[in-house]
Image 1: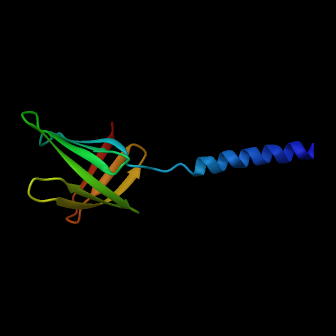
Image 2: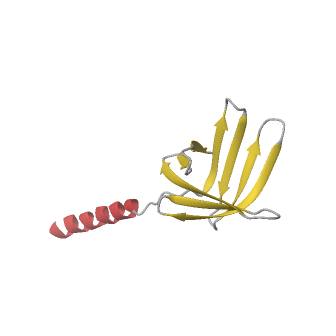
Image 3: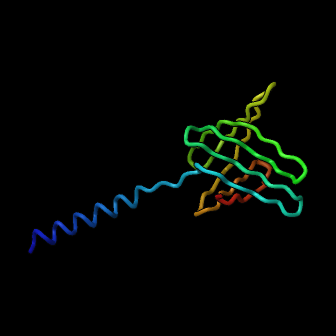
Amino acid sequence: MKKILISLCAIVLCFVLIGCGKENTITGKWEYKDKDAGYTITYEFNSDETGNWHLDNGDEKSSKEFTYTVDDKNIEIIFKDDEDNLKYSYNYELEDDILTLSDSLGEVNEFRKK
């Protein structure tokens, strides 16, 4: 009986440790809609630290490729451009299906996972 109880405790402990190892990630598609201004921004973060940015303002659509790095609670996005590489840095928070990006000027945008 004692061996069975010990075995069951070991199995439960394994499941608990596996559950604790789950990591939040920004990988995926995130959408921000500004209803007042009438535009939508979508970030697609790939697992290989590349991605795509999409802007849809109703009349016009545009896209740009980027690379990114994530360090603790900071994300740096570098857009590939013909002349320059435009670099943006944000603080980010990830809670459930909401990605919050805050820039150094205090602008905060909440993106929802698609």
